[in-house]
Image (cartoon, rainbow, N blue to C red):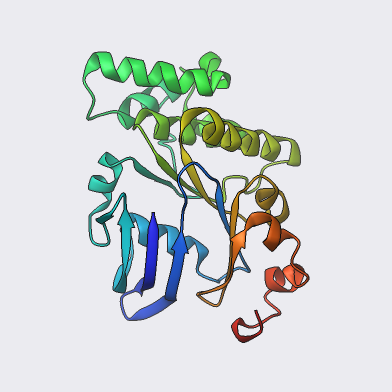
Length: 239
């Protein structure tokens, strides 16, 4: 996926300014930055949930800038928000089945079985309501629903938010597994910046709605001003 000179926001309020960014296939790309820097808005813009003022988003050579979310889902692009990413009043099994609503019966069962192979932790709780799950279980369920939908690019907004360090590590390990074993390209927005960049291939820093830094995740992680970037102390002109 490639983003060129993207300007977007909500109504007349512009949040993102001239964003240039690439998401290489088969690599983990992580976006970090201070609160209010436009990270979540960027994911929503890619998925078609904001107003695009100008710029271009391409996927596999096709312009998808103004394609609606349900069409992007059919193309293999999934977006999991930080909250409200599962149906809490439905069981785990029902969430998985709804995720594959466009599939026929046999194919749906195959995709659910595949998702449960990746997330075997869900097998023993298929009949539990999603609202009763722990934060880690709920995040795994959300990711599993994306697998049912034949996802190729998985956009995750704060997947480890409010999780214990142990559970956060489980989620990070799953993200690496998706990249390494299942030809899925994860795109993360994360406040757990150091750990996220440690598992990533590509890293971007957003500051005040602009790309302040982009390059290898290692180079961003080791940048001398990384802490200043993350705390929002350094302005865009200094990066």
